[in-house]
Amino acid sequence: MLYLLGVVIFAFAILASIGLHELGHMIPAKKFGGKVTQYFIGFGPTVWSTRRGETEYGVKAIPLGGYVKIVGMLPPGATDLADEVTTDEDGQQVVRVRKSNTGLFTQLISDARAAEWETITPADNDRLFYKMPWWKKVIVMAGGPTVNILIAFFIFWGVFAFYGQRTVEPDAGQPVLDQVSECVIPYVDNRTTCKDSDPVSPAAQAGLRPGDVITSFNGTAVTGWDQLRTLIRGNDDGQAVIGYERDGRAMTGTTSTTVEARPESNTDETLHQVGFLGVTPTTHEVVTTGGPIYTIDQMGTMAKETVSALATLPVKVWGVAEAIVGVKDRAADSPVSIVGGGRLAGETVSEEGFPVAEKAVFLLMLIAGFNFFIGMFNFVPLLPLDGGHIAGALWEAIRRGWARLRGRPDPGYVDVARLLPIAYCVAACLLVMGVVLIVGDLVVPVQLSS
Image (cartoon, rainbow, N blue to C red; front, side):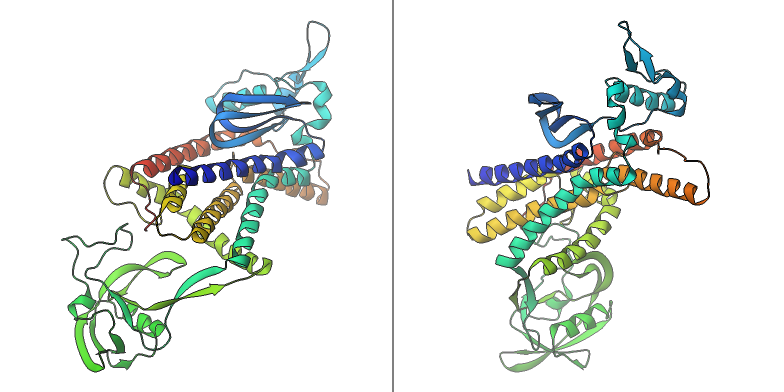
């Protein structure tokens, strides 16, 4: 029951975030005079809907997203303008777009225009999205992801202000060993136990034990963990003479460090080939609290990490696919889908011996993290993402401004429909990656212990 509770809490939080994201598009669109005909959470068959004024509100069967239908997102093409207005059997003018074209991509674009303009009437002429000033388009399209980032900001702010950000730092002074690895486990492996194929760690070969105090490394006196860590990492696979104290007695161990791929720090997942010994010092917890400025600073760091994660997302998803078919273990830092997030939420809430306050903080940070990633992801300047529409509006502003400066005729609206083939390819890639992550989260999930 506790597992189910965690999943339900996470699911409702994500659905609420989706709903607020779409409100971030719909409210400014209506405020600027645009016509919004649909507001839905989910995709697929309609489960429930109701109409309020000109907008239909509802829920669909697959709760993996949402959308709002803003009339007139695609302008008529230059070759379609002559067919834009026709007359029906009653003599009323009706907007139509030519539906036949040659060429696959041309036909796709033409079909999209036809679907877009099928229900548009001359009465909607001044309410079409593509006719809005560029800055209004930017506000409408940026509204959704901005809402997600604001949700993340307020959650992070609350956690940082009342609970604090907790980090583990080595104890001051000469390093006292808390753990000595028995073997060398690759960092990317999602495990903590040794296999028969794993080599013995250099620390174990040197005879080090928990509780030993490191006093020197290759003749250099050691005064702190950061210094020792630098000496080890810079030693590559060279010989290491380690001075240490055990129960007040001075002792010496000799070994050779090995080269392993390890991150630069706990906040930097980029791997570097460095010397590895296999020891962990005793640590203490540091609690740092802060307000909005501190939160903004932390989110700035998160933004840099998110951009880096987005750049490597296809590679990491490929790694998940390899884990699914058993080629290798799933990496602890691999991305997860909403399904994976639900599993992590359920495992956290049902974990015995985990304090209630820490469970609540974990859930809040998980929800905030998903919102922050969704917001940043939607700002990627590719259709069909919101960032693609923002990029189109900004390009329209630049193109028109440049034409005015040069005394040239107005080049008109940017035709985002011409980029639909790219949008379809991007959408297909996103769909494939989404399916891979969902299957991975079901078959080879990321474990809470990692």
